[in-house]
Length: 323
Image (tube, rainbow, N blue to C red; front, side, top):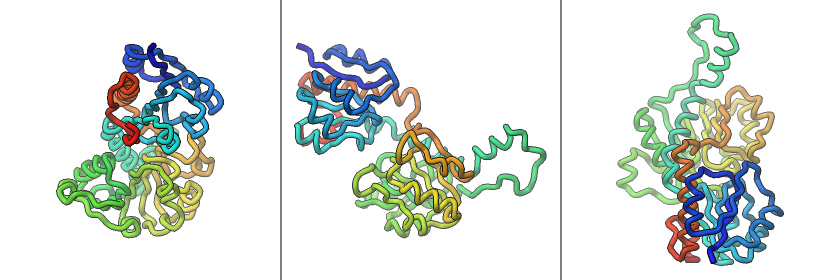
């Protein structure tokens, strides 16, 4: 008998034939997100699930799925999945690393440039018919070329951002639990410093760490107060890494110049106070939103799910100790 797989939401079509070759597929081809109760019901007969970061794969959901053997996430991050609960049940969890690195690094740098140069404000100014003439101080922003970039985290995406920064002759600092190999530091032209020093010295601070207990509200009022008043904070990682209320207060009080955010604490809800600020650029979590990338992410998740249920090793196990 073929194993059963639940696909929780709409995916790019390449994923479905991959699963159907080996599995009976319950494909929920819709954009609505199932709540825990609905997810528990749908998983009663499932051996595997292909899910997304919007799906609440909590301990309760995992423990209520008697046959579940694999959770394949269409994302790199997996903070919506209780990994400990899955591991306790010997359920393998997979994700989709590598493929979205360059797309997210591109978006990070786009946010940095857009925030520094006030591009959304300038476009609205023009579209609203307010542009009457060239003025010497019209919509002047901050320097990017030759400035200092601080990377909090130097994983795949952090490294890709550092490579882009070299083209802008930026001085690049990084803060990380572990020091990168010396050869990599030399290749990227980066220097490791403590987080406090990075915050004090950087003109732009960009976040590239996973969300976990150690990084939740890693950037709060104490850290924001250490940043230059001319500095910009960029977050394309996970929303709760930043204390959103503290960030709003810091921006309102002029403790830093601006922020570029692709992620938020309670997505898709964005505080009205944040929306009202003129010195922020806000995007709806589109870091990897490139058609070829998202399609490949779906296919990778499907392949790992089908492979494991067919008795093979998945390529991207988050908890390989269960294999």
